[in-house]
Length: 482
Image 1 (cartoon, rainbow, N blue to C red):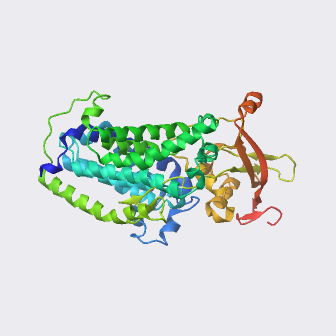
Image 2: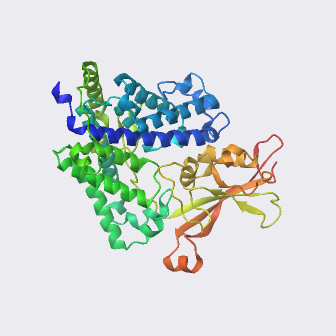
Image 3: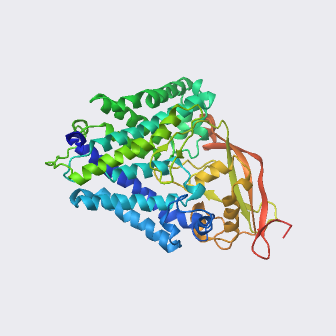
């Protein structure tokens, strides 16, 4: 079956697999350091409680067999080790069956984490990583010829990512159609980075050009991913460049890095050899059993693509949605609507709430807080608590049960939760009371930043949650009602 062979894409496969291994590495490190305080046995949304209410096929996970925090850490650190081995190139020198097992193990382990992660793992880049990881199982490794259908399936995946994002914008917020969304986006995005302030203050005509460029990159360019070379490589290059532009302007976890990884499927070895001096070995054909496996997987993905493809042309397009519990073929999209004003929750504690001025603010690692603190770069690392705080500011605290649990952990001085924060203003003993206030944030003007040294200007926007204390039973209660 010569049509299955893609000898001109060996270097392409090498780049995809090494980069995908690096993304997996970041994802498992995030789980190793953040999962226990957020979702562990005593986390904000405990996994054991979640597993009591879902069946395996509703949320496939190894943790249905047994969950404990040590088991979770075992899963996360096993994923870290396997990811490092992939980045180091072990699948390229190991037997074919071992490469398949390594990629399959990464996919199963991360699937087990995502499917019990609840709201803390409800992001499009989780399903994107799982879908890409599933395809990588069958892509081939070492001195074998890459499987051409898998190269095309990677292109089909990045097509859905880009085209879906373009359509959701075109159908969504009117500011995309009138080219004004970037007047607000850099300021109101979930987690600005050090350059976001500068992007926000670009001239408005340039922002409008950026939106037009975005539509070109997401609605026109993806079609040419399936064109002959060198057109496909040019299309892939445009996607890589636009994703790199997004990396410069904000913190979007590993979404942009993973999309760039997928876009490399459009490059052939001749294109990549212009940038990478890697010798292509003598290639052997895929074993017959692997070729039949590629055919079966390709047919399965084609069948499962029916609903995601239908979703693309639907006027009721869904964004970041999985049609199967294993996240095999999904829909994607981002920023169908853009918030025009930024509100932030500022959490404060007090050792003596009866005393005026006794309240001290907790600082988060990534989300805006102190107006003088420059926004930080964290992507591709994902600060899950900080991201959820952005969503929480748009709704009532009682719609986010994890937020109440978070405040209780502050009142108890819970060390694992406190390690998720940048600063703890009560290092010696937990506060007697905590509260949450809402503030309106905007980027400072150039004159304000020169004069006052601030990156943000904020003003009070009301109470988000009244002061809470712990009653005699250790449960949260409004201050004065213990």
